[in-house]
Length: 209
Image 1 (cartoon, rainbow, N blue to C red):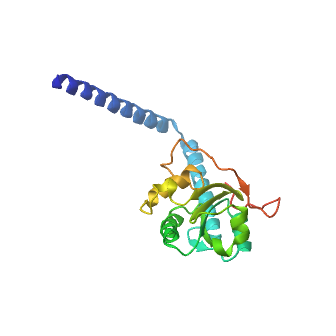
Image 2: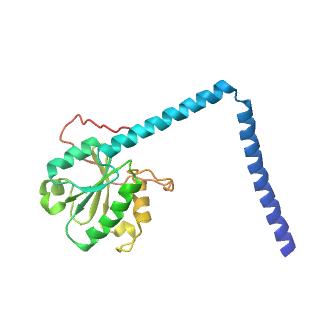
Image 3: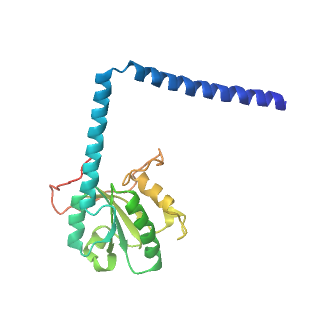
């Protein structure tokens, strides 16, 4: 019986190896068919892509991406939201749960330069807190294109305790597509009602895809 199982496993492994080899052979054959002009076109296309990404990164950094910073006033909140397509805003107060959230967001801000990570004191922002119905702290407002698209309220979606990992929070943010994440779930849903945080009907979004 064991010999038969071993034989089946060996056949399956050989099948996988053969498939991989065939794929590699196809890719090599495709490269062999490329002439000098084709290679130059691919090279130029790649260079343009790299240049565009470099320009985006430079733009993001100039807007404060890459750092986790505090918004000093409600007025500044609207400026931040209009300037970046993707914003994670932590509504906080001076307590332990919010400090835990701060720690994780500081890490993610450096890892996900495509998104602006900020925080604002909820108790000093009564207008925003009422408008966005902020009750539980910490609350993360996940903002895309000047609209609050989703919320992470407290730690309920992160295991219910303050012992959650940065990776768990990262995956939660990725589900709302407010960050780019290679490991994100394919079952992404947007359950929250969008609430506009725009002050103007013609926002100038300056880091479009």
